Image (cartoon, rainbow, N blue to C red; front, side, top):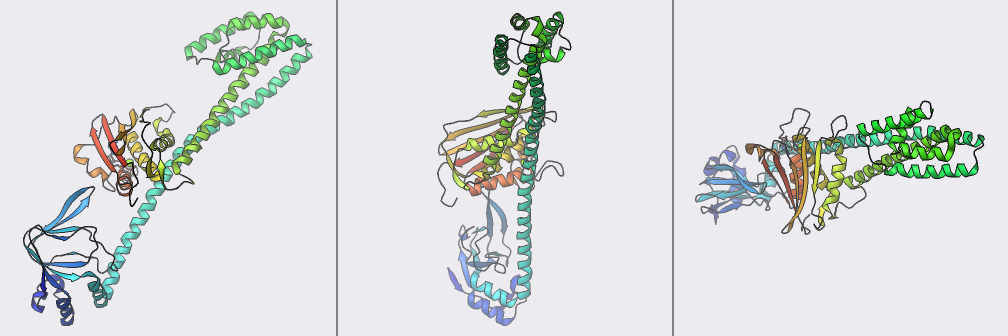
Length: 479
Ligand SMILES: Nc1ncnc2c1ncn2[C@@H]1O[C@H](COP(=O)(O)OP(=O)(O)OP(=O)(O)O)[C@@H](O)[C@H]1O
Ligand SMILES: [Mg+2]
């Protein structure tokens, strides 16, 4: 309901307008309308186009804003002259939407000004104030932008540090093994030449090659011995070598023990080659066994490197569409690989146990895969750091009605009840200066809720903390 507007005197009694000139008040009187709202009436709805600038004349208003799915009251006032609605007229060029909802909670009247026209007038009347206000807004946007970039860089930095560390170990192992391999192969060539010069008969050589094949196969299948077992095995072998006058046999003993060779096999070797060739044959076979296990090491190391590179590729979503149908397990697995360095202490011992409880029947979901990986990174990183070097990290997936559920659980001390809301606030952290930015959960929340229309919650008691992400199974209209 609206009636024609107010006199100059009435307008000047509102603090916003007290210093205006007569012709400015004329404009306001001509363009403004007095609007009445009954108790409970909706004056403005957050997110809808901001068409009116409201000044409270009489009554009480209540202002709310949606915060993480809850409508939070941010103001309640009966102060005559307060304003609400399209309050960014100085900085927005008519495309503003209401930043909060406003309700009348008693019979309430407002002076309502049309936002687009009032905006034009405001700028003509107060050009300098307009510049200053725009400066403030621009400054804030710049700050947000710089912080956003910094966030991304930090995430990237942490990740590439982790990845570099992870790649370094297998790469160094492969280099080391390759150098040893070169030495052993040279040694083997020399031994073979020596055996041949010793007039070894072709049948015997063939027999030796057979034994070599058997031993080499054995290397791959040899059961892993405990430290005590292999020391015992080496002792037995050393005794055998001593009995047969083989000098400097300790390195041979170590190599043969590792390959699972026992004195029984050495006896049959002896009966095949005889005393004359025993020493040469043993050393030659030693080289063969060693080269085999070195090649195994190189294979392991290079496989590990390509697994890491594959995970990094999947993690970064290089060359892939940002929004696509994905299997959530791929992202979870690659994130775990990327963070695997954090599961170990500085000596490389595994200190955090990882349990995957995946429901493999979970259908593919439409998602921003790269962004979800950031969510998994933040949640897993938080879980690991909450456990302070020991505990179990459980990643669980499940189908829940029309949503996919991903739970990141840890056995750390948990989130105190009074902090459960605050941890999602930007910059809220309990970590020391330089350790945490307090942005991890804020970013994750925005990705899950705003980008995917999902839900992010925490359930926590000491020893059992679960961050639960729920994601829709179907494409969302504006995703
Ligand atoms: N799994 C968890 N167990 C206990 N507390 C947690 C857990 N995850 C998060 N928190 C609490 O929430 C706070 C905010 O987490 P958030 O990820 O937003 O920032 P941060 O981890 O402190 O910093 P950053 O993520 O930038 O390294 C943490 O400081 C911690 O107090
Ligand atoms: Mg964090």
